[in-house]
Image (cartoon, rainbow, N blue to C red; front, side, top):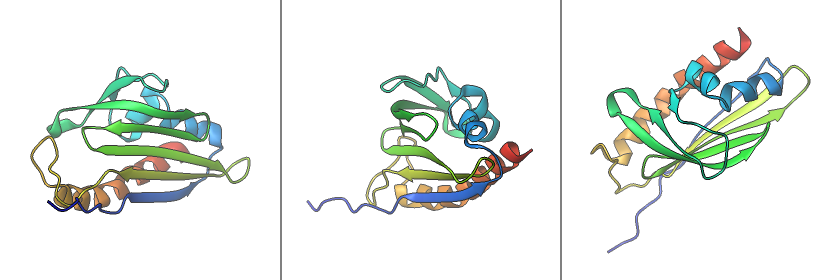
Length: 141
């Protein structure tokens, strides 16, 4: 049996016209995450804490916080295979670099909802463009 071939992470980076504290509030709180991504149920910003994301048609996805370093990084596992991280870097008092990384993709793995990673990764790659654009609209409003 050959080893599973890893697929590249999905990475989206953008510069936001907002101070790091404002962006951090949108990527590290229930209200903030709900405003641009998916509503997290039971989220607490504590490493090891388990919560769920409401993934709409795909149901409730179990997650676990793996990193929490205010105001620069939040990371968590998502579902059975994926990792998601939000990383911030202050560029000035009024500008912040935001990087989203969605990893854990494997060529011969199927999601818990029965779809191959190859298909879902392609869909999510495009989907993240709209999601980070929504973050930009919310944070710069």
